[in-house]
Amino acid sequence: MSKERSGPTPASDAVMVVHGPEAFDCGDAAWLAGRVRPREMLVAGVMARCAALVSGLPVRCTDMRPSSLLGSLEGRAFLVNRGKTPESGRIFGEIVAGRTDGRRGLVQVECSSRTIYLWNGGDRLLADDLAALTGYTVVEANGCTPAPEGVRTIRGCVTGEAVFVNGIVIGKATADTVVLASRDGQVEAVSGLAAKPHGLEKLGRAGAVDITAAWCKSGSVRAAAPSSGDAVCPAGPIAVIDHCGHALYRELERGVCGILSIGDDTTAVCGHICSHYGIPVFGVIDGDADAIVTAGYAPGSVVVEVLDGRDDDLGAEIAAALDEEAPWDDWVADTLAALAGRVRVVVDLRGGDDAVR
Image (cartoon, rainbow, N blue to C red; front, side):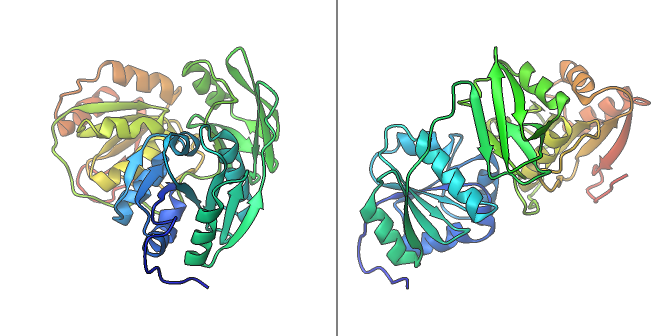
């Protein structure tokens, strides 16, 4: 059984690092914050940041991966996660524990199974204190065996779900384990993946990939519906996000009034996040979405589907002609006029209503 805290404990002196949106959307982060009262809460991950801001909890958001973030911290720290299944949550902790340089072991609070994993001889006092405060069970665990050079194994997949490398969908899982390899900077599917050639092409255009160090995941990026925020100033700048939705927050931090997003999944991610800020999106898609997140758009948003060709090419053409400081409404109207006959408007929220065509 959990107990009320009467004074400082190892957990209250620790930093709580939360990974993924599910821990916020399911209420785990809020419950743990109330029980543990950690010294600080840090957020790792793009969609986790979105969910954290919606939750209203006092957090500090970062662009770092959990392993890098935990490795950079001094003093006590623990990882909070809610995997899509208990097994995938355990696998995730094993991967993070194997990549956390500069820190001996890892304490992981896995909410999907109410388990506190003590990886690789981590902080036992912290794990026991967290167990006393939460009622979760402490399990000692060890891992993981490094993969061969140039090979990456993604475990805990569900058949049919999207597989990502560095934020780009490269295919769908056909087994619970996906094996990828990189050769001369290009990623190849070894097993367990129905590859998406267009996705691999996009990944290749982004630069050489070291698959052993890349950010890889499977599944949706957030299950919860997007929230709505107040509209922002209708004047620039306008930012371009090209098949790289995880770069969005860097653009939001410079005070953009709108986003030109290129790609189906990128547009869905940008729309989902930007709806919280009341920032409109002009999305260019070609109909190959992988349903990785529930789309939602702020008033003023427009999404167009390319009638002939690919979103990459038309998006690049629009971006090349973009006047970043143009008033949003004027730029959207001018762009739609220039694209007449080449696109089909599938979302049009310029009137502020949920108009989907």
